[in-house]
Structures are given as C-alpha cells and as structure tokens.
Image (tube, rainbow, N blue to C red; front, top):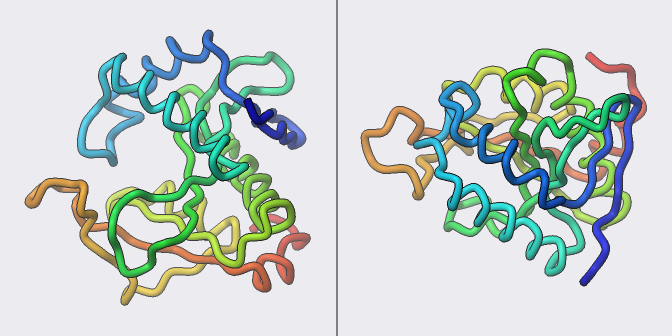
Length: 192
C-alpha cells in the first residue's frame, strides 16, 4: 500500500485515515448542520464507503482527502484535501480542493489553514497546473475560504451539479479556480 503523505500546519496534522476515524466521521456525515450544503446526510455505511474511496484515491493519484486532526490534542476534526471529481462538467477533468469539518471545529480558521497546506502540496509536490473548488450557491462560508486561499470566481463557470436532483436547493453550484502561477505569486502573502 502506498504511504499517505503527512502534511502539517501550525495547528493541524493532515494524515491518512485510521479505523478509529470512522465513527467520528460518520457522526459528522449524519449531522444536518455539517451536511447543510449537500443533498443529504450519509448513513454509516455510506460514510465508511467514502473513506474507502478516499483511501483508494491516494493509491491511484498520490493525493486525496486527508483526515485532519488538531496537533495539540490529536482530535479528529474532519477532512481536507484534493480529489478528482467523477462527474461530467465543463471544467473537468481536473482536481478539486475541498473540506468538511465537524461543527465544533468550524469558525476557528482550520478549513483555511488546512486548505492552504493542501494547495501547496497540489502545486509543489503533485505538480498540478490548476485546482478548482465548488459548492452550492448557498454555502457562503466555504466560498469565503475559497477566496481566502486565493481562488477566484467567474459567474460564467457556475453550473448545475449533475449528481444533485433537479429542484433540490443545492443543485446550483459556484466554481472557483486557482492556477499554479497565481498560487506561486500569492502563496507567501499574509492571510486576508
């Protein structure tokens, strides 16, 4: 099995998944507040299957959605990282950056901190040319993270997510982008 790179920030550790992450991750995925901007919450079986797909993605691509824990306590707080979307859209194929944190971990800047580290890995270590991120039009907190990590939004890129049922409130999505040159020019600027 390919080892998962461990990434660190001032307050966080982004690492491979452990079996004892499954229960807290399932609790997150069953929490309506965490899943507010997704079509539905996940069952335990769906949550476990997601971890299995994430783990397989690391083996396939050399990157993925890392489990995130706090460096001080070792508490699992969610995921952040890079993935290859498996649906058809005008901006694909490509690599997406995303995050999902437990409600207790939200509002502390962890998503931005972890996402900055994942972007660095994507551009420096994985050699990616562009990374995108997308979320429902209603998810203003994630859009704020996208802007904080240097991504830009062109309304012409917005799309209806094909995996979300027609008529669902989170069907319409915004798309943000950042390329390697823009990241390199702005990566060491102070946080906005």
